[in-house]
Amino acid sequence: MSVANAFLELHELDQLLVQVKDPVRAARWRQMGYALAPAPAVVRERDRLAEKLDRRWLVIYERCLGRYGRGLSTVRNRVCLGCRLTLPTSAAPAPGEAHLHICEGCGRLLLWD
Amino acid sequence: MAIAEIFPLTDTSLDLLELRHRRRESALHQFVQSAIERRAVRHPELITMQLARRERLGTTALGRGFAVTGAWSLCVRAPLVLLGLSERGLDWDAADALPVHVVAFVLTPGESQEELHMRRIAAVVSGLRLHRSRLRLLERRDPLLLASLLREVPR
Image (cartoon, rainbow over all chains, first blue to last red; front, side):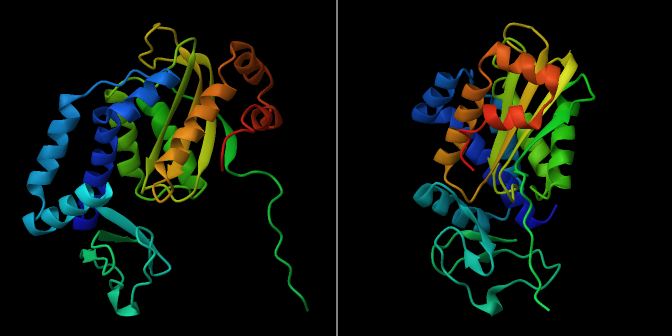
């Protein structure tokens, strides 16, 4: 799995866990008829995945997660969909490159489409 | 010579699906495969894992043979609602232990607001809440009936 995909998986796990941990969101799900319960196995899975990731990128990811509610943003047509900043052409990774990039506007990790 | 682009007249973000399997995991896999065919997802393996994890946090079966599952995810390219029908019924770990005959699969791109996904799920739950409506869908398998039941789902 590439570094970008590992962070995408971490992001997906965080978004899922917030549905259970946040009382407002959990109440909305319950209202629709769903019974959500914290699953320690999913939390452990998140921790295990985070341990494998590069600490420097993880710090950036978690800082943005705390600030914006998500640490990752997708890029479409060179536009960061998190902050709508148009990124320079040079910011695009070479085809097949799995390196991570940071948005110059919001600081989130970028996931190029 | 002028070239005109013709857009499809039917709503391609909504469709019916015949569920072939009996297990929940297999049905979720079938939904994801169908979403891939519609170019609605990227990283299918991640979205399949995400759906399985969601089920571990609590079943998405709402009782009386009906379930609404899905994801609000960066792995989703385009909004999609698929309705899976199963004559035999699936084991969906429902609280009432009844087999599930109707499963709605709601995908919302992660770039959209979370609120939109919640509204889409709520509209699907509300559109399929009546047992009578679900029976009609199982009997007729009519996309027009599905479109009328889910007309309130935000795109």
